[in-house]
Image (cartoon, rainbow, N blue to C red; front, top):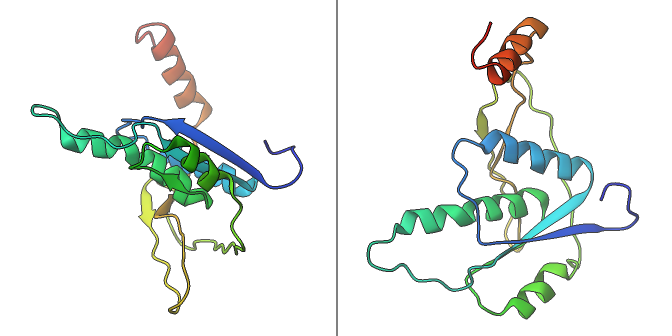
Length: 159
């Protein structure tokens, strides 16, 4: 997508993801999309759903959170709670009338791979869409540590 001319929008259609402890990887994906000026919009393929007796309502809710995170973090839209897929495509592929991108470079934060919340506020009469936070890179591992981890993974803990 990076090499294509013009405005680039990816529309991701999915029933959602359950990916515990992968915040760092999804944050990296959002960062790369932002650097490449690629917008990711998402459509929850489940449409309107109900929770049946015995089902885990939290699991259904959480599975759509990653779709929302990808869209909100890249300036896209999250279409959900509707069975009208045609309207979803029209909504997600229509360019906004105008948009502004703001950025900042965090100072004095430790590269620990942890999620840091963001809060953006503007004066009234404006609509704002901002990512909920960011994750700084994890510290790089030395060659020896990395080699041991690769060996462990491939050779059943052989050191």
